[in-house]
Image (tube, rainbow, N blue to C red; front, side):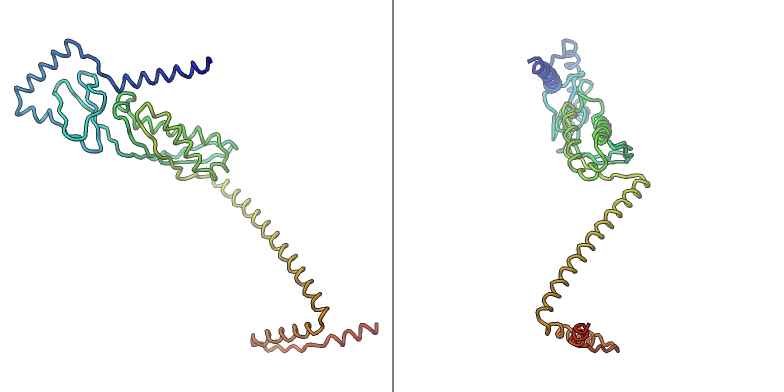
Length: 284
């Protein structure tokens, strides 16, 4: 019960924090209203000139977070299209909602089995909440990059070299899930993480190549031995067939002569009947 209560407290704090950031509609106060009215009055007086400072254009893939006297004036970002602001009291920050990418610099990592390797990757992400990305973090792009580097080092440090080489997609998916959860409060959605290259020291490459060569040679010897064994069994079966039919041996002689003649050799082979040898053997 205590664990459930403790797990609910951070969620409530996180939700209240997000509500304060996303739905900030507090009153600007008496002085704020006075300044706002004066600014609007000056804007109306200088209308032909002030129109260039009041009307802003937000592109289709952008959203604008507008601050009025330091406070977010609405519960959501503005745009796309035309946007009207009051000079001197309003300022805005444009946020790009397109999918962005950055390359993780090569990270030198010590794996679980004490092997030094260098790994780099690519992260694809986009901002799905413009207000959170502006109000909750100073520089959302730099923070995402730094978090990606540390997460890559932490995850790969718990994996062996063989797992890194064979389970790259699974490791990348785990990194993506961790980053997506951590950057949720920043209004960032990490869509994809890819490990581009895994570099090994030259000595390790040579050792792995020697090991692979030895394994292949052992497999080749096993295959050759199995082939010899199968060939000997086939010869044994062929000899048993020839023993049952003496004429089969003569036909084999003729077939061998036909094969030699087809090769256009100068060598001539005369088969000797086996009966002559059988007579000598019977005398012994």
